[in-house]
Length: 89
Image (cartoon, rainbow, N blue to C red; front, side, top):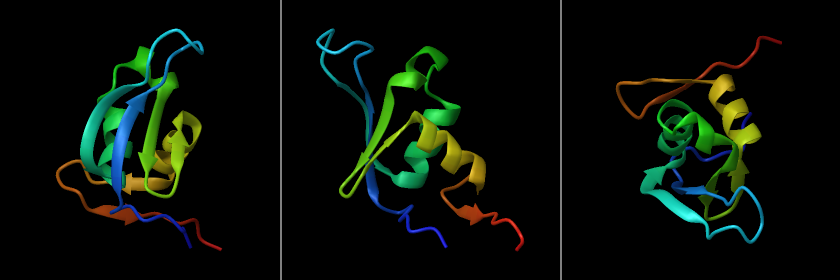
């Protein structure tokens, strides 16, 4: 079972490519975690994705985790429902 609240409030950030290069940029606020994951993978420009981070109240997710969650979950594109596609035991 996943211990992740996909309804948790989330913010999408873009981190600087190199430390000290520039400040962190806020790209999207007011999303839930499922929406934020979908936004990063489906809408964020490819050059920005490696620096993407999703922040929730309890954790920060970087691109490897974001992509892994997106690949593991079936995201419905037409609404905010998320269907779990767990492997059979």
